[in-house]
Length: 536
Image (cartoon, rainbow, N blue to C red; front, side):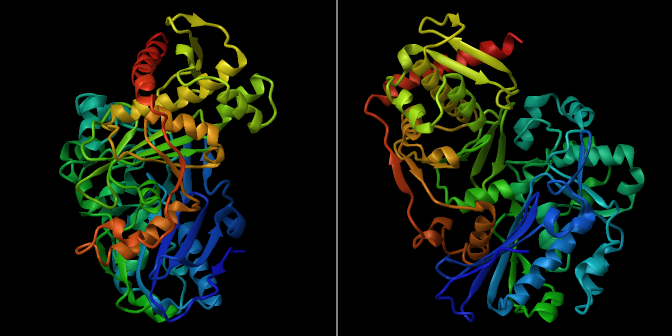
């Protein structure tokens, strides 16, 4: 059922820190020791281990409406803890617990549920048996739901436009964001809203289970709701009023992502042997937790090169835009993180490889290395699928003079793709406030991070050294780091907790003339990309 590991030198009485991840398809636990070594992990898959809920990929899809059964998450948590108990995990060694949750999902606790959490839990029974009827609606909207276009349009209209929404909340109005989901529920199911006493995110929902009370929403995950002012770190009353009445009372307070919010409920002390002194550290979203798991620092960029490409940036002063997202930084509440998603990632790289008639990545790398940085001024923009950043589609090739052409020579095509993808990342990161500096670093993860030729282009385009780090499940790992950091944040910086962890591995350094080539080329790319969008 569950995957689990025990470190061969583990002492079962040594202090432990637990990270939980309530993701789209599973719930996972990772326990670390004082040196932040992983000593245990286990997971419960929703489709596999809870077939009675009939989910596909952890959810139910009905057109644009995508939800997950809230009680499934509760039952999966029961199963995870029982699995850990049967494995002999010593819950009494845990000093603290934190967690992450899939961003933008929301849970609607019905009136009276808080009293059950606080006073009514019987350690002889499962949480599922006792909380199964504690929700105003049995189905939680999740991040894949795109049914709230009308609500997004209303929010932007009432707040003075998309850019104003972004300036306040960090992002323009997005269909999957929680405020717009709440607005839809209020409009279409007012009985659900009226019977709801607290609305949690998936992250604060997980923390609430452990706390035996409603946990606050943390700043970082709260930034992904279109409801929180990212600078004051308070609910924005105008945004609240645009979504539903008396919403502030239902959302409750906000808290920094690394602060303790209380101790574990007596239920867990009695049923599983937790220490009554075990602290619950505020849970956060999976993307902020991944930033913590990757151990990013000020000025760093993380580029995940997967099916889609994702970029995290640590920012001091953000510039919200109509694309991308700005969240409060999960490990330093005075700073920020930017998140950009690029749909045309490895699938686009695979498609170009096939189009130029080569079978292997070794051949792809050889063609890439046969061309010079800057590609003779040729620029390619390849949106085989409708792109998220920016919203556009099509194949667009431009020669050195800026003239649009139909085809490139094979090696030019390969370099145009790779350079274009990385220039897009640089340009859109700069749009959100990123500035390449002398201490800038790029951390590459994902499948393509094993390709040294691709990483060399990444280093050149960003004019920064590229590092790699072997890591899996960065969200649950980041949650475990947060569990440790939450106990010492008043006297230590987050980076200090990872001093004994494996260092990043240097994979590529920029060529001496990289800035001279790519600073003007990236500016050209920006203009050409804009022309592609505005021509639609």
